[in-house]
Length: 369
Image (cartoon, rainbow, N blue to C red; front, side):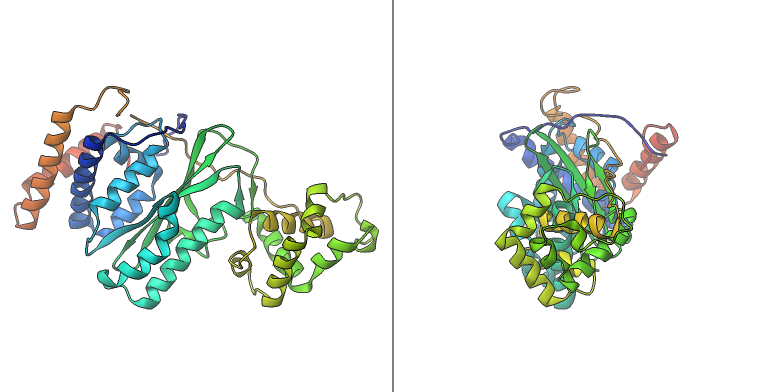
């Protein structure tokens, strides 16, 4: 059953209160270990890739539903909670921490028993996911937070967030490796935002032909003609009715640096769109210009469908819907930790009780995870 609703998620400056973050780390660790022990690390990754479970998890930890920190602080707490864990870890973070992701994976994956070749693949996954949501999904939200959750089987999930500077609102992108495929065609398990916007969506299935044409344009050097032709009739056949070159499109192809990026890509001769995307210098403007060139030359229209499929939900630290109850919070941590510890030595009664409680709420319609 899908749940629906709308909740704004504005940027909140500052940091989570130290006492709250410390307890978020403890409770995030207890919940995560309960899931790992009962159902395995892959289940934890799967659930973090589900926007509603993620939101509920954040609220359980005591964070606001209406704050951009719902993503950044929750993932920060989870990363701290799973630091040194032998089954699953979180790499990356906000701002400068996101750029350390490849180094963290290369350094820590072997500690989990992940081979160097699989670690290298995970680095590629991390970089590709970040570039897809910054270059292929052009929705006006600039990525500033990137995390990848990895287990010892090299299964992965990605949670990253972008900010629209003009509105001050955030958008969260969820990835699940079971759904991502080649990572450029409908790869998201969810994209969450409070509103839909006009988006050049090169990950949409409708953009598949444009993706192929973009590779052809680079490999055939067609962009060279676009940078020097004075008339459209020089390279468009008479059968097309009316096409016009947008001014910003011409500026891209006439810019020396942009042209060099495309020439470098042409020399590499990418065999597919993902290879093209990952070439240094090929960013959002290059992707957009190649898409528009495909429309201009071949009449193929890229998708402008916003990939948003979930809106934000739920509540915490600013006192909404009510202030965090510290005593209850501490008791929850104690119960969860005790249940996990006892389950590990064979006393599983509390864990079974928690499962039954979950089933009760699920049947009652209050939760559908």
